[in-house]
Image 1 (cartoon, one colour):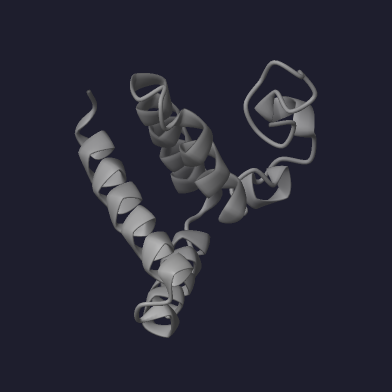
Image 2: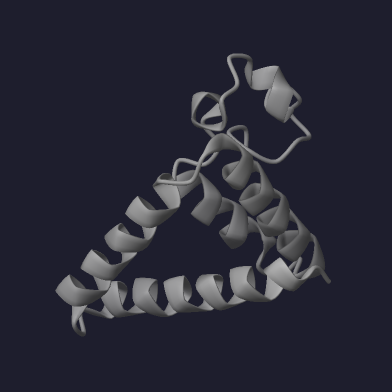
Length: 106
């Protein structure tokens, strides 16, 4: 496990808890605001940081198959599958043209 993966796991745990709070209505406004702030901060990453973060998400998803679909949905929800956000002009650079590849085709 890469050291960064522990941070990613912690972030995913916090995001899952916040999503649950939004769903059940308990402090949903605060939870939603916090999720939006997390998304904003992650959105400030440069293309290289995003690639490293996505790689970490994929490692964690591979290690946790029971949560892999949700982990990839977090990536999509944060807009991290947009090739332009990664400094790429061609979706094939992410393997998004391959129906077996995780990403927009999921």
